[in-house]
Image 1 (cartoon, rainbow, N blue to C red):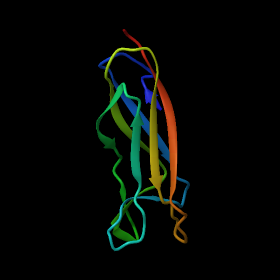
Image 2 (tube, one colour):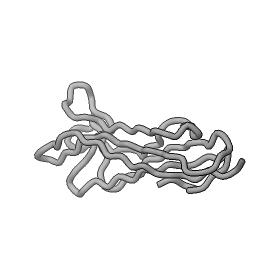
Image 3 (cartoon, one colour):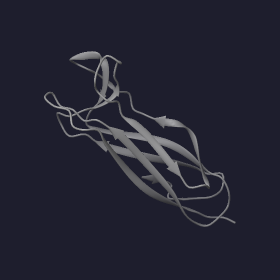
Length: 126
C-alpha cells in the first residue's frame, strides 16, 4: 500500500509491503555464509517523479531456535520505505515493491520466489 494515495511536490510518501507467512513457515533475514538458505531481499522501483529516501525499514527478526546465528521472519510482517515527490505534475505515478525470498519449514525449503506489488499515487499541483 502507498500512503497517502495523493501527494504534492515535496511530500513524503510511505510505501508499505505486508508479508503474511503461513504458520510453521519462515523466511530468512540473516544467514551465515556456511548455511545454504537464501535471505530475503527487497527492491523498490519508482516513476521518474519519485525519489527513494533512505533504505527499507524492516521489523526486528527473531533468532531461529535451532540455530541462533540465523535470523528469521514468521507470521505477518510489514516492511516500509519512504519516498519523496520531486516536482509538480498531474496524474498517476507508479511504485513497484518487490520481495525475493525462500520459504522453509522444519522439513523442506521451497524454491526461491519473487513477489511484486505495483501501486499508484496521484500527484497534484502545477
